[in-house]
Length: 179
Image 1 (cartoon, rainbow, N blue to C red):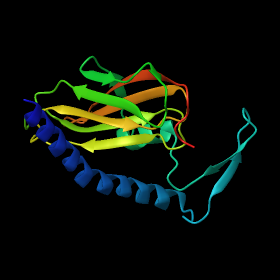
Image 2 (spheres, rainbow, N blue to C red):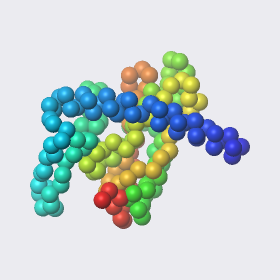
Image 3 (cartoon, helix red, strand yellow):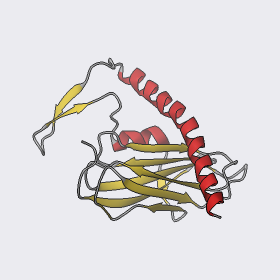
Image 4 (tube, rainbow, N blue to C red):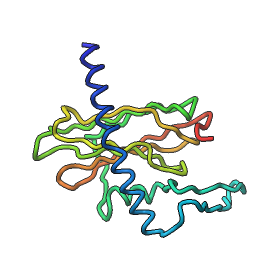
């Protein structure tokens, strides 16, 4: 059984690696066209609460903007069908294990199209974007994410009928992992 689970996990990861870059790059191109900014330029903004300068790069995307890019004008509703597993306390923010499992029949008419893992306080809110098809036996994903400080990790699920579900979990980080 361990070998079977290992092979399932390898296939899921390889499918993700093959599909995620095209979606991410498409979103970035759209965002760049809307902002009409030069990629080589960076913006520097003052943070009022910490009075430190932070550099905003071309891939930075706030949590609100990331959610809007995923759901558009629709709303993601909390659901018991989404199981998000993350530690309550992460000693190292560079390696925070996150698992998402969604109860779905994964049939042609009713399946999970994508799983998006986001964080609320990093400069780039996107952690992972996983695209699924009906060929996936189960709608689940596990990975390590980086968290700069204590914050909430949120999973947004896109379904084949155009609706969205979400689940969130607060994670306390003792050592930040982004810098």
